[in-house]
Length: 67
Image 1: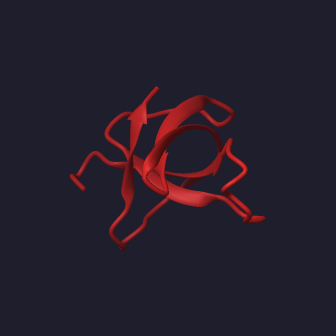
Image 2: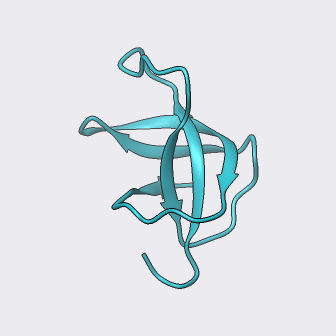
């Protein structure tokens, strides 16, 4: 991730997601809470909703595919 990376907790819109909390993804552009995006989740592209912004994250993350 570069210097201008933004980090977001998102909820994928798929029955494969069984979590109660969001998953963290990164984006090179600033996005809005509530925005519908596209993410790679378990090997397939899925719509997701951004539920919060994360200030810093240091693990390897998946990128948001499309806004």
